[in-house]
Length: 336
Image (cartoon, rainbow, N blue to C red):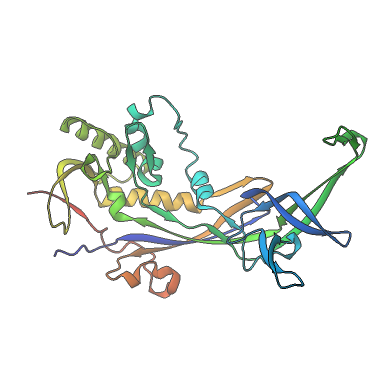
């Protein structure tokens, strides 16, 4: 069986800093010690904490087990760390591609989606005609490392902020609480899969049709649009090519049934890889009264030949290739 050689993935490690919480989990029922007494809080604002549950099992004096809500002041931020979800990161990373996914004619304009970083790297699904592109980008949640979490109990009081209880009586005090954070440091890992990036399937035979085409001419026109878009990302690179063919075969396939699609050449892949890495390096945003910015991105152009070398950046940074020193792997070829 023919082996695929070359750079198969671009792995990266992200280090970011910030302050406060940018990704909340919403109101959560917990308990807290207030004036020396343990009280239930129904509207405690809790950020996203990895592996945290607000329920704990305890035993009473008779040895019977029962459930109760945990105490907000007792959260261990090393065991259940703060994190920013990958969905939040993806949203911020690709937010410049403003796409109305609810537009009634979006299924008739998939070519416009494919000519964007969202279409080529974030991926998409169009439910109406089941067009989709699997994202070549893997990125983990941004895990917080410092653990500077705090329990804060706050209140509103005074005549200007008086509210009414459910019974209609005035109340001058309204208590609420939050788990907040001070300075933060995040770590995350990610990877760009070359096989998924370089090939855009236009065949429905394998359930991965990125866009419906009815003729080879439409496929060729789409390839030109995608090629021109990639060239616009780096005007200095004249070698970018996106080539349509009706019979591309995955290298090593036993039953070599060709499928329609568009294949990006080495230069085209490189432009998209560098663009995505530059977007990561420039990622910074503030929301929910907190902020985060990326400080550094460490890159490995990984040409692994065995499974244990995948994501070697996590295990041993001394073995990585921080620069591209060989071609990207080619997973598809034209059927003879």
